[in-house]
Length: 163
Image (tube, rainbow, N blue to C red; front, side, top):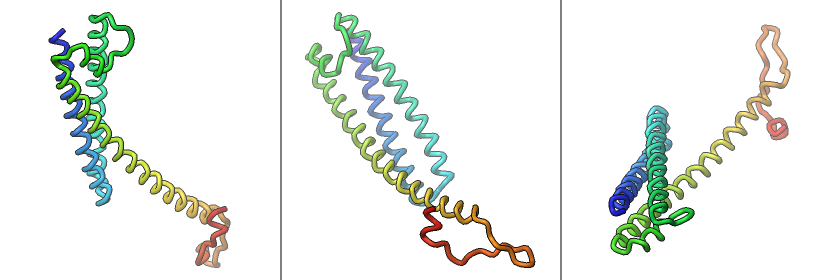
């Protein structure tokens, strides 16, 4: 049983480290967004995706190991880290420290993704408006000069833009 707890602590440490890496990647992504570095943005997006896959793999391993420990202790249902720590008082301090550290890093990631999502939504809203303006101007029939050049109105009114 002690070997499984050691392995669980190791997986938790790896999860914390991977989440910290993801946090650094998010900072790099925001810097690339500020500087309009599209190549850097594409590269960091790929790095973030690989980091997310590693986190998912570690989380799957953690869940499987927790299920094995629960079976070994004849506990039905999901075994939380708090329950596990209570069942192993000699490892309680370390397990709770790792749990709290992981929660803290995940909270930071959650906050940053929420802000980035709101910003992306606002930018997409503005882009949608610009595309609607262009589409409205293009789909209206226009007048042509004798030379075959389209005559473009100098200004699109507010009602034409929204319609």
